[in-house]
Image: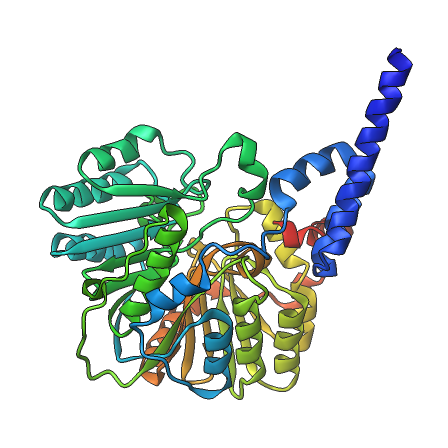
Length: 461
């Protein structure tokens, strides 16, 4: 009897492994993403099966929000068309062009946090706030107190946080907000029985909208390390305050996520007040994620890089690119375009650093100017193409941002903003070092092997 049960369990387990492998193959994923899972399932089936159910399932065919609801939320934004990149973003992400936005740039956490708290204090009707990470530390405490104060004054306050990104925060922190009258919701709340379909798809967006007139987006979360640094040194990040047309795009993104989380649809015109500005620029707010057929951020980035004529400047904490993007950057550099890639000397993950470094040999051989920021941890996300396109927001240059995370980016067509951001990039470059080929290519064989090994798993990092 014991032998029979053992054979039965072995048969069921083997069929489970074969079934999962068949599902992975049938999903027609990018081979670069499928192969690591197949290798793990074959070589280490017990571990592989566990990790696949927790991290590997594909949600791309699901929709968080109906097309009808999206149309209702976006109906107040005037649609337009503008060149191939604009049309791509409009057709794949419903990101309509918005005109006339003023920008304030914050290159450190203290100035950003001060501006955010001032804007919150001035709120009169509503505050919509969404972050991947909200820590229960000094910075999180200041934010919590400011929001509670406004809620008690009668201002509508809605807060979305990522249930995994903010996992270290105790229930008491958010219960304090609720007690003050704040509506607080976790995005894709993780429950044990449904854990497998949610943990790999996280909301990485950082959005604040106040009274429909002022907005914030960028790379900074709510945590002390963004203001005061940590063992890696000061955190160098970039955040933006928006006033004007672009705020409507941020509002639509937040309310889409609010509907997806609460099934409460908010479309009242009070949340989209009219604005007046003499700024001549155009932007598109792109909310991307794993739902649906198209990978808008990856496609738009490749298109922008392919249309570059003079320069492509990139700041990112993690460079784990898709093959099309990696080839596009190398091709641009070989064609004589000024391609610069600015990375942190050390990120917050040694494993990711090794995988990142595996991509840099060919980049350097193609003529890409790779530099390492040495004045702390570079967490900024920025893409500059030529003199009139800047891509800003929450997305990194990696598989996770392009494939798995819910991200928000602004594609800004504005020479004045590009010029300001280029000066900021050059300031960061002055605090960086460019490795010499003779130094870089002398890395040990063991180091190179470790880099190559971890590169196999870069779609999963």
